[in-house]
Image (cartoon, rainbow, N blue to C red; front, side, top):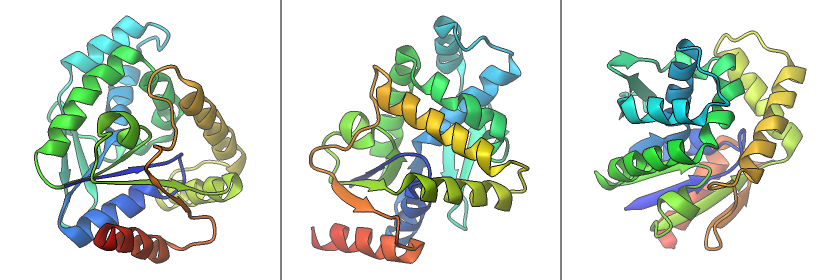
Length: 219
């Protein structure tokens, strides 16, 4: 069974996807983390993000493995190195959308994401899971929330992770990511026609999990 959960940054899709996967005993696949891993590698290599051929080369030559820790969190292994913490740093967040918009990179990742998803019952979250990666997913959801609420969530998430960022920086970054994600030529962020839309602005995590689970159970 494939469950696709899409939505913009800060909509809660990663947290909800992880919890739903735990509840169902499914594999959780954070496709955004895969792009973050490649972004981290590109930054380490001091790659010019305007040189798309160099970014595609990195994607083709990289090994990315995802696994679920006992607590449900995601372990991200890039070329045999655990980069689960590194990929969440502000510099990676700043550049990940620039890498993710490259057609060749997405083509490489598409094959890997489909392979991972089909390996077992899976919950995948991202921005194009229900539209491109698994358009025939058994269940599709699109999570959204008010922009200011999304900014607040992302700010708290980064603070909880010990990252020193300002609210203004988080707001500017999220606005830029929304623009890039929704206007890119390849697999832009959009709601699949058959996806269940959930506005999470006024809902807490448990309420969203309950709603998603109810839709999965009852169809």
